[in-house]
Every structure is written in C-alpha cells, then in structure tokens.
Length: 162
Image 1: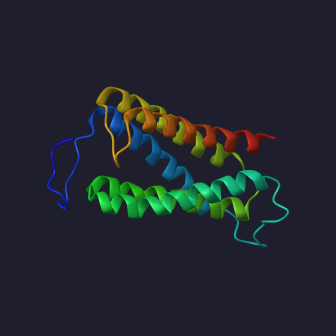
Image 2: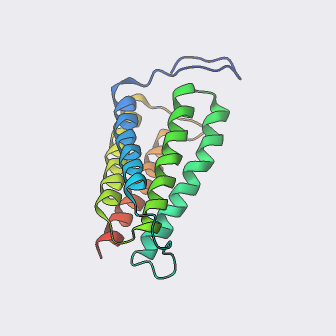
Image 3: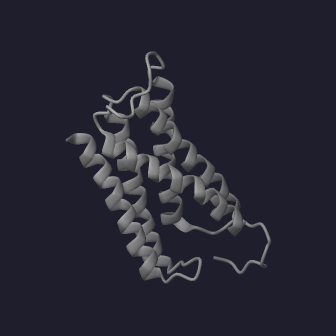
C-alpha cells in the first residue's frame, strides 16, 4: 500500500489476491441481488416460524456488520473499499430480505455464502503475501479474524442444509 497523507482520499494497490477477494465477493452481491429480485413478495414475511431461523439470525448479524463496515471504510478513505462496502451491505440485505419472503429457497443463500468463503480464502492469501494490516492489528490477528468469519459463513451453510 502506498503512503497516504492522513485524511486524503486514495485508491489502494491491492494486487491480484486483493482484487480476487473483491471480485469473488461481488459475485456474492449479484447472487444476493438475484435472490432479492426473484423472491416472492406475495403472502407475508416469515420470521418466527422460519425453517432456517438460526441461519436467518446469522445472516442478520452479518448484514449488521456489513452496514457498520460502511462507516469503517469511509473513515479509511479508500475509494474502492468504500464502494465495495456499499455493495457488500446491499448484497447481504438483499439476501436477508429474500430469505424472509422465501424461506424454503436455500440454493442462492448457499451460493452466496460459498462466494464469501472463497473470497475470504483469497483475502487470507492476500494477507499472507502482503502483510497488510489496518487499525493497529497484526497480520496474524487479521488472518484469525478472516478464518473466523469464514467459519460463520460455513455455519450459515450447515444451518441451511439441516
């Protein structure tokens, strides 16, 4: 990453694995959007009797984190990260809405989560190769966090399959 004057807007140099993470997760955004636009808006939303309530709760929490990340990325002032954070939050919210209307449809949510797991694996490779850190974290702590997030998406898939 280039040295950036504090407070300046900039575009980062992310390299192959950084862009691979972004691209793979953007496929997830597209899948979430497809789920949203193909969801049946007839009837009513299902929450309490949702057949995959635990998965729904996990997705709601992931959506909340994605929304909070908009503020984090805006504070960092990196233009692509800000744009991606909006797509990320929108994709999560779109999938959450789709799951509320069509609780039995699990294929697109599973594909969405797989994209985020694959994107997370690309991020792990990026972190290992670049040594990138942010917010005073070490690369090792960022790697552990990314593995943890991948585990949450994997749990989401498992809960959709049971």
